[in-house]
Length: 296
Image (cartoon, rainbow, N blue to C red; front, top):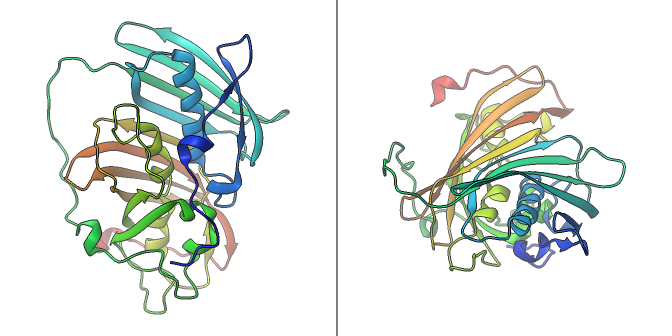
């Protein structure tokens, strides 16, 4: 792996600075460490959620669900973050966080933070049948054309290909609208109890466009897929480092697409479910028409 950037620490990069005298207003300088074209929408979501955590001020409330709406691209640099506590109850606290640069609409993040409670323990989803990380190829290997090596985001994670093809290679053929990758932060992300930090799930969940690329297949068509929104539901914890992001692009049409992803640890524990809508920005070539359902 030959990346020109040193790995960044997500926990450091999303740590907000509280405005003196105001427990609900923060500032943050978003670095370029997490860029695709702009800073990752997942990282922007995590930054807003970290500010909400600070405003709640009680670590017994932990992230359960969050939905981010990206009204405008968030550029690297100074941003203001305002947190509103919508409801504070014994079991849950609900928040709305506005992250923006001056004069912009920025991003709005609605979230629920909850305490563990007594209830049923039901497993309704099965982990995809994929090899463990140590048996999967390194997706950041430099073969001279690997697009992952052009995005600063990937300097911060180890990535292994669990299901799918290397879509930049000459032998690539169109496949199902699914793509699964193992992710591991190069600077481990832990909460105060030593568990994988729930707020570190959003950045790796926000990698769903690869499933659409896999279905589009080879050819002259190229596109970007900026996030319009991102929803993450967190259901369990892990102390493991590797997280499988199994992504599925359900539909792309008329310049828009929807995707979803399950996030699993390497013991088969479902950690979270994510979904998003994407804006398809064509770069070159003619958009293909393809039925990928027959490939599943």
